[in-house]
Image (cartoon, rainbow, N blue to C red; front, side, top):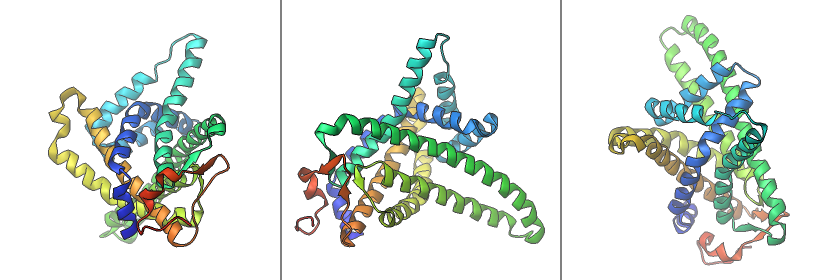
Length: 297
């Protein structure tokens, strides 16, 4: 943790988190639309939208979630011509994957890798496809969440019979545990799939676990900060955008700290994170991760 803290401070995490938050503002409607479309293929669309906006409301507040829903509904509007629809779908996919490309760049910087210039075009399309696959996983996790919620409702009825005095507490604990597991899976997929590096699952597990713990605790602190400062009121009509920016900004800082921890765990265990076949070691960024003055093995 000490090595992680030193390397984290030296890697300009706040500048990178700002870039991720900026990209998210433009990509968020597209990400939500694709997630809704994929999940609605297998589940009731009305229930899918309700579940998604309820989750958003628990994180950024119901007022902001309502405004976000209006933005998404406007963005879903499609024109009648075939050409316009094709262009619209292409733009939607490009916008949705942009935020993950931004996260990929930050992870590459932490792990000292960069794409090979001669293979940049091929890797670019591969990265877009991986980003799209990660968005698809959000749709799958949303489906899993819906199924689990339905199961918890049925289970809650049993708990009221078995433990009438503790049923509410047990259900709340189950919800927190399930949310924690889903968040951990999301971070594990991001650390494993997005960077241009070969990352072992044992390192991903430890990094995703720490990041999920920090994120689970941090989301309440971030929500408390946003709610207590009333930042959305201070910015008027732009309040929704500002709230989303702040929430993503602080969340990105947590993600980058978890990624730095993953790197340090791998290095200290002798499992150096190596570039993928489309990437090479970026020696220009080595110093940011060296906390003891030694060269990377």
